[in-house]
Length: 209
Ligand SMILES: [Zn+2]
Image (cartoon, rainbow, N blue to C red; front, side, top):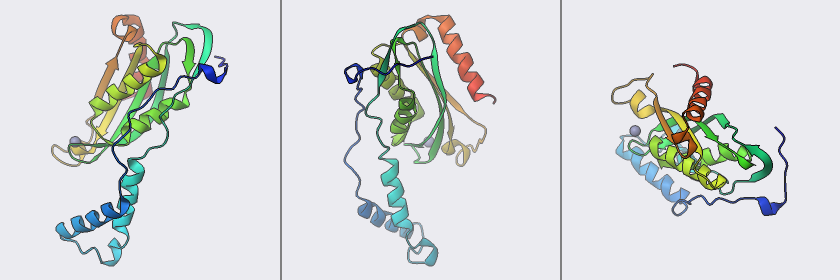
């Protein structure tokens, strides 16, 4: 497929909701120090020196994934009716119920109609919505709504397969458990052939189990 880059006037900018105020790493480090004390640790022992600052720096990075705020579309006037599926995207997020990591494999599909979305933007958008306290279901919806906003239509499908450490390392401790979510809008919800094509591509990308 040939992608023709056109004038900036054809760029489409889709707003992504921003998060609350930036965090204060110094304040977070102080709180981590307090947490270590409450957990029975000695924050001054050798192995923990610098740990609160490292944890605070990680939180700051995690909550500030860079630039998914814009998405670029390129005119491809003769293109319509083709399924475009972007898979192999994987991001780490944090389950908001337990503040434990979840690893999300993401496949997104859409049907271009006269323009295509810059492919790199898919991964950035996934990182953007993963970089916060999340639940997989909401991540899936937010990603799909963002993509629908970018293309200006509802013909969008997003499938996510999640490994949740809150299931693997606590509670039921089921390491093999995976959670699959699928948000299908527009033609993906009404056209069984298109829907099946997307699911077949997705299943092929994920493999087994
Ligand atoms: Zn959880």
